[in-house]
Length: 461
Image (tube, rainbow, N blue to C red; front, side, top):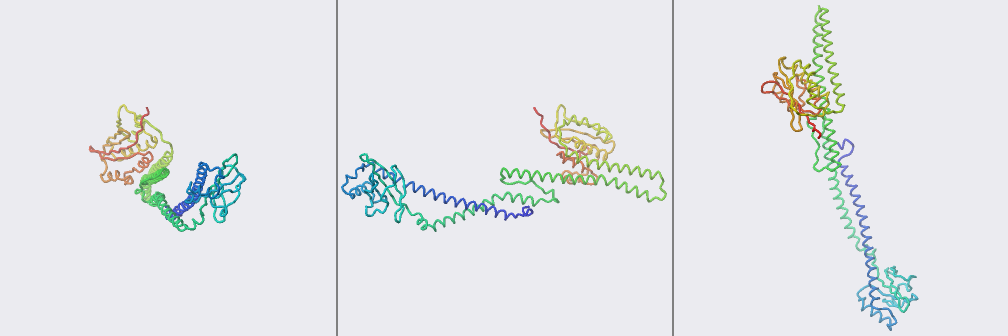
């Protein structure tokens, strides 16, 4: 079915895989940049906290009067001993109130960082640029005899570009592995997502109008919410199509069956009369009279078909079955041309939802079959029974019954209603519309029983 609409199933899977892989690629790339940015930011924050803690430790050790140290070397030795500076990459610089550098752990002659402090008096982080390396610095102002000195802790920043150049092939390898894994996962997920669509496509491809009997409801192992709605819609549509085609076939067989006899009679009587060379006027009058009767039968058949098609479009209505059957019993006795015995459950109210006119035609046609195929002295019974949510209406007669072969075919396959001399095509068409089922049985005491099964409505409290 997918190919019928111009898209191959394999192409659809490839497209979904490609789209999902591209999304995965973009998300992986974006995640890499975001994670890298957070790592760099986190590393910078860690460096800033280290610089801040170093400055606070020095301040807490009462390094306030640098004049107490006779030489800068004494201060440098003190700082290195206090903070183990020889094992770290942190540098210490001190500026006087005039913002002149008065101490540097690098030594004045080796200090190539800026000599002057920036124009600010508060705690602040800032960046410094050396000749080859960039630095991160932290300035901590403090007072000595009402004069403001500035303690600056400095540490070199790693060269991230060189680190990236050094580890580029490891990063590229990891990135390629992630891309390959994302493609494999995308391919697996695409096939998993499209598998229900494939099942639906295969189901639709197998639907053959010439094999309606083989149509089955579509079932999936694990349908989702929206997919379940689609499956219910497909099953409902295929069921409707199946029923409508069956009903059309039954109707065609009914029309063919009902029209064949009048046409045969018209043809036979006309040919017989034309073969007579001395046919009388009375014989021609009888032929015309008989022809009009057969034409009336043909017209009645057409009216019946049009009536069914019209009524099938009307809305259903709820009827109380016992009282409704009592009202129609008089009309059916006229069709039967004998008494109709009616039995039903006492003191019960049986409600069904149906098309009353079609339901009447169904029972009337079954009763006419009794009148047509049984002797005049045969009795006819209309019996009503119910159990739980089911209602059964039986039409029984005391006639000769039906051949076991025909009876078996009728109960096994509803498509066998075209059997000759049975004439139940119209009944089956109506039964399909009102959603009723037939059960055919030969009675032990003789005669045929046709049981109609329907759904019973619950009484409202």
